[in-house]
Length: 533
Image 1 (tube, rainbow, N blue to C red):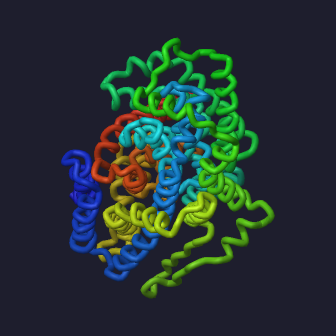
Image 2 (image 1 turned 30 degrees about the vertical axis):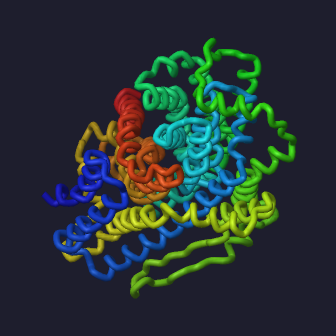
Image 3 (image 1 turned 45 degrees about the horizontal axis):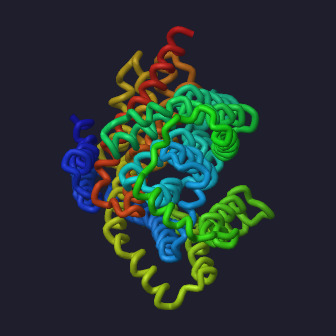
């Protein structure tokens, strides 16, 4: 009975957003009210920890809102400067085929940004670029979230592993797992993605084809190119995880893969005979052929993107110690409401700050007037309020799920109670192990948080059914990665950037089945390994 009550907030969110297709700024607050009633009345959650959850959820939401505002500002700057038409022209010179564009941006581009940044930035950066190439906003978000399903396991220089898996297990479990257990989990995780991730580029173009034309015929015509694109990323991705560890697979895998596929395109190898072209965009590009663009035009057009990527690389890889320097500036709150809960934020390390820097630099580079600047700021702020309401509500729900372990009845937290429902599957647990990771990312919007929440549970459950704990943690990692396809706050943030903020449920509806199938396929392999090898 108590588990059914624990599921009420999830049912509410799913029903309102996916079934009723209510916008997140309505579904979020309603679900928050339901979560609060469940936590306080039925869970007996300590009121102090309830207030801690409210504050922490709001703070974390503000971090994401900072990224969101910076992204929207940068997109508005690019639009005002006419940079997208120049970018489109360059991309069309490389290839006119929609399928090539989709795979490069939603597969290789997303993986590279995920590798250096994380925080939901890949979709926020790549989805608007896809929209200006002619993709519908729904198709752009669906594609970029699917494309992130492999890279997330080693996103933000391996944080889901180095922090999520490493700190998610107890000290006693860490001793049992051995000194190099994070590296071992990384290798097994990469092996799963090597086998399954190879098909994601094909899935990306199939989803785009279906959303645009209710058909997958044009996508299937490019199946050879899509599969090779998948392998071009996942093979070096696995090798780098095996040789170097969890920090660089997504970064180097995407760069190596993109270079391989560029070579294939230039040789016109494996490409479909007929190009798939969005006629309206192609016609616009043809009209622009009368314009002659110099290197300076292209430099200005790509400046904001280049600036953000360079700043992310410098700070994440800590070149010249700059990353460490900017992390010396922090905003922290210690012992919230007298508890042992702390919050710390590094404003100058946040991707949102880099978006602001890039936008301000572009203001001067493009020689905008004061009036231009005010128009851009006004345009950028239109959708922020509704999105902020949604993000704050959802992230408070996540914190309540975590901190509800502080209750008068001695219950597990709401999140752990829901997890116990899956772990009760007994000998079939390996099949459902990735689904627990997926669930964690669905509610928390983060592979790292999902791993922190459930890594310890995965180890205990694996030992109970005779599965190797390393395999259990790898299945958790795989599930938490593909869970980002439907992670609520990632969907909300990306939708806001491309002005699709009233249709978040449609994104989840499109991506839920692929995420579940990927997770269950990984679980099936885990089941076979556990009982037959």
